[in-house]
Image (cartoon, rainbow, N blue to C red; front, side):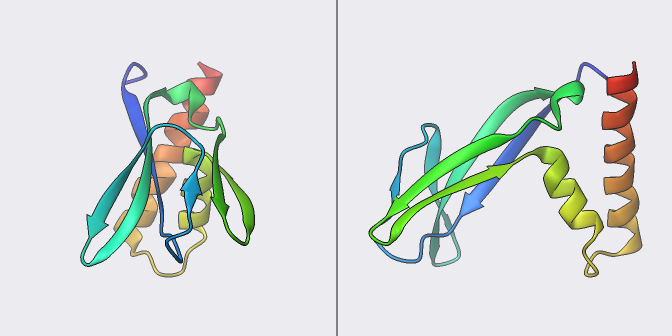
Length: 104
C-alpha cells in the first residue's frame, strides 16, 4: 500500500468576478449553481502527505495565499465535531498510514 498515490483537491469559491488565479493547474467546476476553482495535485505518495501546497488568489481587494497539505485537511477534519464515528476512524487510519510510511 505504500506505493499508492493520493490526489489532493482544493476548492476555492470566488466571492465576485474579479478573482485572478495566478497558480497554474486549476479548472473551473460547477457544483449546483455555484462556480468554484479546483486545484488538483496528483501523485502524492504516502511519505509526502504532509507536504504543503500553496495557491495564490488575487482580487481587487488584495492577494491571498492559501497553504495546505493532505494532513492539514485530515487534522482539521479530525477535530470537527460534525463527522460520524466511521469517518473519524477512516481519517485516523489515514493519519496512521502517513506516520507508518514516514517511519518505514
